[in-house]
Amino acid sequence: MSDSLQKKIQEICQSSNNDRARMMDIVQSVQKEFGCVSSEAMNLIAKATKSHHVEVESVVSFYSFLSKEQKGKTVIRLCNDTVDRMKGCQEVAKALSSELGVKFGETTSDGKITLEYTPCIGMCDQAPAALINDVVAPNLTAEKVKEIVKNLKKGVDPSKLSLGKGDGNNTDSLIGAAVRNNVLKVGDVIFADNDSGKGLENALALKPEEVIDMIKVAKLRGRGGAGFPTGLKWQFTRSARGEQKFVICNADEGEPGTFKDRVLLTEKFDLLFEGMTIAGYAIGASTGIIYVRGEYAYLLKFLKSKLKERYDQRLLGKNIKGKSGFNFDIRIQMGSGAYICGEESALISSCEGLRGDPKTRPPFPAQRGYLASPTSVNNVETICSVTRILEKGSDWFLSIGSTNSSGTKILSISGYCKRPGVYEYPFGISITDLLNDVGAEDAKAVLVGGPSGQFIGKNEFSRIICYNDLGTGGSIVIFGPKCDLLKAVDEYMEFFVEESCGYCTPCRAGNILLKKKLEEILEGNGESADLDYLQSLGEGIKKTSRCGLGQTSPNPILTTLKNFKPLYEALMKPQEKGMQPTFDIRAALGDAEKAQMRKSVLYKN
Image (tube, rainbow, N blue to C red; front, top):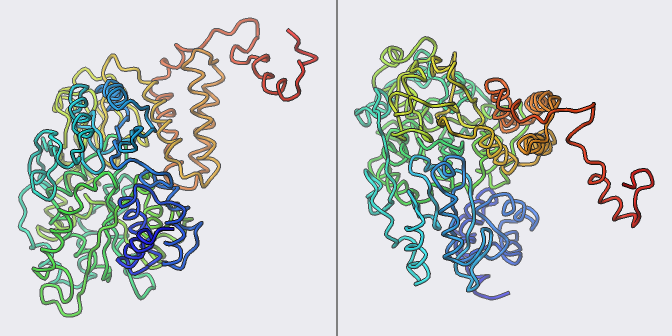
C-alpha cells in the first residue's frame, strides 16, 4: 500500500469527519481522485469510518458511477434511452467506438478514456447527449464526436472542450455548460416573477402550525407523481416524536424523459432554498438536505455558491432573519447514478451513506426517516410552490388549476415533436392542446409520467393533466406515427431490469421474465396465451413488489396491452394443429445433453 494512497484517503475521510453516514461523499471523492475505489482504498475507508470493508464495497458496487475497477481519467457516458435513440444516438455510438477504438464498457489501450452507456441523463430535449466526466455534451452528432475525441486524445480537459453555447445561468462561470433551459411556456407559479424573500418573511410572521394550515388550505399536493397532500405530510412530521427533524428535497429526477428539475435548479434555486427554509420552520427541523442526481454534478459548484450567499445574507444559519431560535442549514448530497434513489426511502438510505435500498414501510419517513428521525421528503417543484403560496396566499394558489388540482404543473416534453422543452401549465391542460403547443398534432401515442406512467393513444387525447385524470411527475414522451411502440416498451423494460435494486424477488425476477416473454413475442414466437401471461405476471409484480419501482415497472407492458393490443396480436404466430410454436424441445435439451455427455433417449431426432 502506498503512503500517498493512505495519506489522501485519510484526508478525504477527515473532510467528512470520518462520518460513516457520509460514505457517499467519501467514496465519490476517492473515485474522482483515483478513477476507482480499490479494495485497498475500501480497507482504509472502513478503518477511518469504523465500518467494515463489506459495507464500503456494498455502496461502491450499488451505484453505476462508482467502480472497484480502474477507469480512465476521462469517462464518456452516452445516454441511450428511448428518446436519445429516436434522435440518433446509435450513430453517435458508432462514431465514439470507431474514433476511440474500443467497444462500450471498455477503456482505451492507453488507459485514458473509458466508454460507457448510461440511461437518461436529463437532456432529452437536446438529445443525443453524453456526459464527459461531469461535463454535459448535448445535441451530439457523429461529426461533433470526431472533434471531441480528437481533442481528448490531445489531452484537452473535458471542461475546456468546445461544445456549443448554453443560456441563462448555464453561462455562469461556475456552470459553463452548453445546456439550454428550453423553457417554452411560463406559468403563473414557478416561472413567473416572484418577490424574493417575501414567502419566508410571511412564514416567520406566523406560527409554524399556521404555515402548515396555509399549505393545507392551498391543497398543494406532491408534484413527484404520488400526489400526497404536502400540508398533511408536514403535519405528520411536525407531530412525530423525535429530538431532531429533517427536510429532504428530492432532486433525483431519474424518470426517462424528465428534465424539469435541471432547469429549476439552474434558474429557480432561490425559490427552492427559500421553500426548504419555510419547510424547516413549519415542521421544526434545523437541517435540510438536497439530494441531487449524479448526472447534474455540473451544477454543484454553482449551487454551493448560492447557498453561501444565503448564509452571508442570514437567510440560512442561526436566528434566520432575526427570528430568535430558528436555525436552519442546508447541505447538498450528490447521488451516483441509481434510478431507485428517486424513491423516497431509497433516497434516505443513500443520504445515510448506504446502498440505495428502499426501506420497509411503515414506519413512514414522517415518523422514522433520515437517521431514524422524522423527515419530510418533498420534490423540487413542490417546495418551489410552497414559497409562492407563502408569498401570495392560499386563495391565489387555489384560483389556479382545476378542481382538486390547484396550481400549475411543469412538464418536460420530448420525443416526436417540433418544440421539446419545459412547459408550465395550470392543471387541466388536455393532451390535445399540449400536442398542438409542442408541434406533434399527428402523434401516435403519448407516454404520460414516463415509463412508470402510462401509454395512451389517440382515443384518449382529450384527457387532461390533473390528479383526477392523468397524474404525472412531469415526463411526457411523444411517439410519432412511424414509431415502433413495442420496441420502445422493450427498451423501457430493459431500463427497469437494470435499475431494480434486486432486494425483492417480484421485481428482481419478475421484470426479467416479463422482458423475456416480450422478446419472444417481438421475435414472432408468441402465442395468444402469452398476452394473458404478461397481464397476469405484470399485475402480480405490481401487487407484491416492495417499493414504487416494482409497483410501476410493468406499466409499459400493461398500458400498451390495454391501449395498443392489436400491435401485440399482429405479432402472434399462427398456432397449427395444437402445437406450441414457442417451444423447441431439441434446443431445450441441449445444455442437459452436454452435461450428461449423451443424447436424449426419448428425443433422438
